[in-house]
Image 1 (cartoon, rainbow, N blue to C red):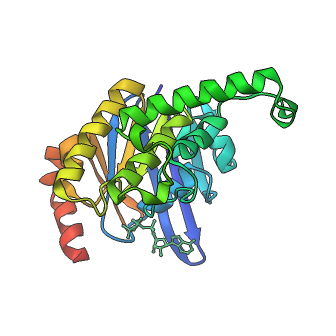
Image 2 (image 1 turned 180 degrees about the vertical axis):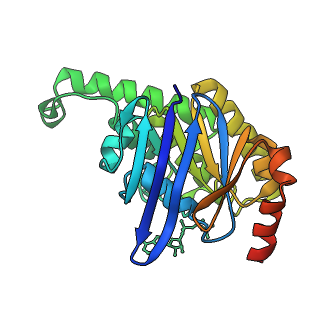
Length: 253
Ligand SMILES: Nc1ncnc2c1ncn2[C@@H]1O[C@H](COP(=O)(O)OP(=O)(O)OP(=O)(O)O)[C@@H](O)[C@H]1O
């Protein structure tokens, strides 16, 4: 059974059918791309997968459970985490605290343990500090742990968003244009980080990206959307040479 199955999913905004008859399968631990011209419906797909939008038809099944239309926090707990096209960090909080917010989703203890700072509270906090620092080390952000997130350069803020998403221990990680605004060496480094994350965390990844070198460089399987419909799917080589894909991109220019 696939980790994620998207079956005949669609959504309309008023008269606009933004996504239609979408079928996708994501296998555990693999790396997928979701591409298509501007306005094709890619971010809308992410918004449906994470519960921001409720599909007007179809089903989304994660690990055998129907998560269609569930609240974002519930879907996150079920195992889907994401980053955003426009970075959304808690900019005034420290780098460390941004990651700890992700961990809070996982570590559960009774409210009064925190309110009264009972012994269990301190241990949990220490455990979270340890786990957050371990994640920051992977992303080479440990030296900046106590700085405000807003003081990081752009490329590092993108990495911090990924670290925070991973802190929620997802089975599926959705990355919305992770390489946007990066220079070639930053984006090369990010490619290596994403490959490392895939192996180290055994997490499936679905990413939206306009940078074709990036997509072709790391994605094992690619879905191409145009006007809300899948027009092609397959490995990088087959997508690159697919006439429908070429026409969609040329038409979009
Ligand atoms: N909340 C909304 N209300 C109305 N229309 C919406 C809404 N969200 C998205 N749309 C429309 O749905 C279509 C798909 O938009 P979406 O942002 O998913 O495309 P995209 O492929 O992510 O584009 P880009 O590559 O430019 O980010 C667009 O026509 C957009 O205007």
